[in-house]
Image (cartoon, rainbow, N blue to C red; front, side):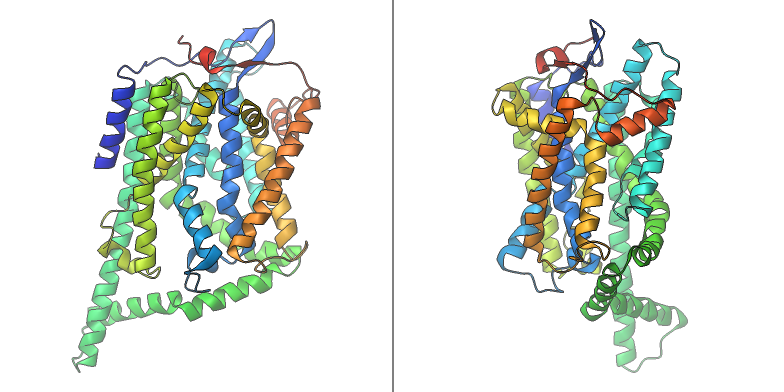
Length: 473
C-alpha cells in the first residue's frame, strides 16, 4: 500500500478505532412515507455541480487547449490561476465523490427493495435500472453529443456490484484499493513505455546524426518517436484544435458525425483500458464508506476533522506534484516518468474527495449553513436531471446549432458560464421539488424501470438526520 494511503488509514483508525461491519439503517418506513438520508443528497448536489467546473473546459474549448497550456501560452493571468485551482481542487475529486455515492446508492436501493416486497425482485429492479441508465448514457453521448458522458460507464460497472452488496466493509475497501492501485500501475507503466520510446528514439536519431547506419530495430524506434513528436507538437495540436473548432460551429449532424468516432473509442477501448478500473475502484470504496457510516454522517466530528485535514494535506501535496510535473515537462508525457516516478493520480483523487466530503459533513454536524445544505440536497435529489441538463444547456451555448460559443471564450470566462448554470439549476431544482416528487429524468427512469407510469406529484417525506442515519442495524 502506498505510504500516503497508510497515513490516511492511520488517521481513520485514530479517529474511530472500531469500524462496524454492519450497514447503517438506510431505508426505513414511517407511517408508510419514504425516508431519505439528506446528507447523501447534499453530497450528490455538491458533486454534480462541482463536476461542471471540469467538464466546462471540454464543452467550451478544443480538447487540445484544455489539456495543454502551451497552445495559448497560458502561463500567467486569470487563465493560469483558474487552471491551477480547478485542477488542484476539483479535477478528479468530484468524479470520485460521484462514484463513491453511486456505490453507496447501490446498497441503499437494494436494501430498500429487500425490505419492501413488490412485483419486482431486488435483482430484477436493480438490473432494469442499470439497463435504462446505459441507454441514458447512449443518449447523452450520441444524441446530446457529450463525449464526456459517465452514465454509460457507470451502468456497465454497476452490473458487477450486485453480488458484492453483502460483503463486509473492510473487504469492499480492500477490493477498491486493489483496483485503484491496479489503475495506478497501468498508468505508471504507460508513462515508462513513453519514456522508453523517447530514450530509444533519441538514441537512434543521435546514431544517425553521427553517421552510424541504424539497425532495423533502431529504425523502428526512430519512426515511433518521430510519429509521437509529430502528433504532439504544438503546431499539430493547433491544427487538430482548429479542425474541432470548425466542426463544432456547424450543424447538429456534422457534430454528431465528428463525435460519433470519439464516443465509440471512449466507450470501448478507453473504457476497458482505463475507466473500468477507475470507476469500479471508487464504487467499492463508496460501498465500504457507506457501511462504515462515513457517507451517511454517522461518524464523530473528530473523525471528519481528521479526514478533512489528512485529505487536504496529502491530496493537495499530490495534486501540486502532478500539476508541477506537467508544467516542468511542458505537457510532454514522455518526460513525466523522469519526475514523478509513480503515477499517484488515483490516490490524489481519493484524498481530495475525502477532504471535500468531510467539509460538507462538518457543516452538517455543526448546523452551519443548514439552509444552503438543504438547497444542495434538492439539487442532489435531481442528479440525473441536472447532469443531463448540463449537456443540453452547454451544447446549446457552445455548439453550432445553438449560440456557437465554442472556442470563443477564454478559460477563466468559461467559469462565469458555470456560475450561471449553477444558479439556474439550484433555483430550478428547489422550485421543481416544491411540487413534484422526482426530477423529470428521475421520474422517466423510474417509470421505465417499472414499465409503468409512476406518480409524479410531491408527497411528504421524512428526512433522516445524521444522528438517525448513523444507527446500526
